[in-house]
Image (cartoon, rainbow, N blue to C red; front, side, top):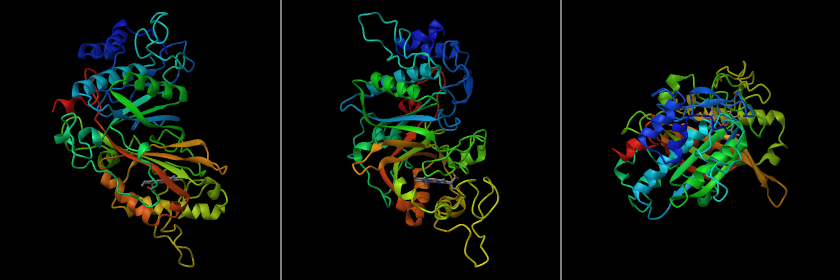
Length: 430
Ligand code: HEM
């Protein structure tokens, strides 16, 4: 991290956020109002950073960053509960401070001007310090609101947002293989921090959690490594823990029409239009069983060739699958119960989603099996559309016998904001 940016920028965040302060912060690095969040606004600012070429993304724009931003290598995801009895003023103050801190962190700055080392010997530092010298690492911070922030399950309207609860904001139906742990699911607020360095992502969540003290507490969190999707045509398709190329037919940043049709919310009050719904599911993968399955069967279960990623109907990785293609004995080349067949838009009324998940390994169980899987994240414009695909999958997908879902959540990701606004501001002023 570097402290060479403008004094206006640093004082805005250390003093808490004000409209003028945020404008100064944006102005200090020459961000244009209306720029697309997640757009590259530079590279890591200081010669002292380890990776001077890391991209620096803007926090501000029409949409939040961390959705169409080329998926980074690492994830720290966190969900929070707002303190019982907290007032709307306290919630707004928290969102203002989070906006200010996120802006600074994505610029490669510490959370305040005094930061990790400048607050004096007799005070705990404002910033925890472990990301000093690591640069931006391409950090993006994406905020989401749980349904309970609008209205709790027993109907309480804690923050005057109940009237704004979008009718589309549904929870997901229970699926086959759901073994959900409530303490690892849901929450009033969420933060998705993605970066190319795990320490930068963890530092962001850790410091935003500190800022929330007294107003919101960490409910659950998840670390992820190794992106399992591509969100830009500039990226190579990565592999998941089953060894498969994952993200081939994902929606990419360059596909404006598919994004408009499937990802961005287009109806509703200001602050929601331009947003999206984030689906997060922690899916344990039975990798020891999978590793004993013949390669041919692994291909059949997915519907794609494990090595090349090409559909079993032929062609290369990016050839469209042909679900009507048969072999000489009349058998379909892509099994109708394969994952690709069950999940493909052609078999789901055209519905697609932007996937942005990560691998995880959280130690092992008492029988020596890895607690490993996919922390699945998808962005969609309606949770019900996701549920349509998922239900179709859960009904018949041959993948299902290798999977067990332990956590499931839906968050509304508000639209992006301008440089003088805090995240979700339009909702509180509606
Ligand atoms: C551990 C669980 C999962 C694994 C290992 C996995 C893996 C894969 C792989 C390897 C592909 C093919 C390459 C690609 O187009 O990206 C794929 C495609 C896809 N998956 Fe999954 N997936 C999992 C869970 C899910 C879930 C829960 C959903 C939600 C409904 C989902 C939705 C999709 C979709 C929509 C596609 C694209 C299908 C197409 O257009 O061809 N996946 N997945």
